[in-house]
Amino acid sequence: MGSLDRYILKTAFVPMAMSLLVAALLLLLEQMLRLLDFVLNENGPVDVVWRMLAFLLPQYLSLALPLSLFLGAVLAYRKLSLSSEMDTMQATGMSHWRLLRPVYGLGVVMMLINFAILAYIQPYAQYGYQELRYELQAGLLGARVPAGKFVSVSKNVKLRIGTTADGGAELGDLFVAYRDKQGNRSTFTAEKGKFMRGPDPDSMVLRLEHGRQMVVRAGVDHPGVLNFELQDIVIPLPKATAFRARGAEKHEATFGELISILKNAQDKTSHSYREYRANFHYRLIHTLTFLALPFLAVAFGVTNRRQPSGAGPALGIFVIVLYHKLLEIWAVGAVSSGELSPWASMYPLFGVFSVFALALFYGVAEKPGFNAVAYAEIVWAGTIGRVTKLFRRKPEGQSA
Image (cartoon, rainbow, N blue to C red; front, side, top):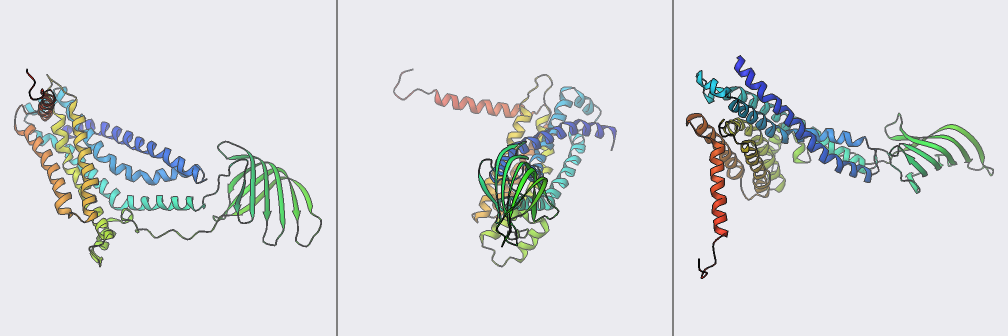
């Protein structure tokens, strides 16, 4: 790799990394509010939100990687065009095909990373996310008890909390009714308390401070009363059936497992088979899209220094988002429903996108003076002009 390649890579890498970070953070922040509301409604601990977001990170990275690669490349070549560096490079005999090489190599690396995420990392993360949701809904992650109400925390434990502080971590004015395995009944009152993780994963500990305990033992008429400074009550968590095995959902199967499922399927007309098939081809096409993105980025990044236009990055993002929405909603849906095969919906769409990107790049590289952004603006202005003229037509029979 020469100094020129390293310079172009450095110019493209910084905006690519920044756009990837911003896109991932925006997606995570949007989902964080929904997860926080879900966890609180299920009376779960708040720290579960961060674990669920960590499981969602691979999915959001696979969505943000194509846009970040495009933005990094398009902003890099736009900078080279506006600073006349590209003119200097071309004056020394460097063609656009040669200048594309470092960014195309970066695109291949990003493609391999994206394939690893889609094929192996995301299936396990998706399964971990669903398992965490199941445990939360089944009540296996502890309880967030509302203040002022009697709540059955487990079969033999009833609890009332007077006040809460620090987001429910600190409890005050507690009343606990407890029955042990021998039938002895205990009533606790305490000034303070908090839930803690115990050594046994199937139980949690309620630690009480500065309280009083009244014990009524089986077969004994008179209760016993004692004061305490610190008392731990072990509360067993509710039993639940084990979570299902991984692979029951199409997104949870690895790439190799998808191949095995499709190969060994008995009924190739079932809805389940069509969904697995659509997901398999979607992962392939989503990965192969990285091979076309550098062509599109250079075509929209090269601009005229005398008449610069800022529409290139925005127009490119619009094309990429439109392509991905058509792929995810229309093409994948058509294959899943059995209306079309992947060869009649998903791959033609990928082919049109690739040919479009390559055609624009070929115009920039081989036709002096060709500007994809300027050409798109001319087409857009002509379209808007025709639409405006259509709406300005006077009704028939009305004199001019």
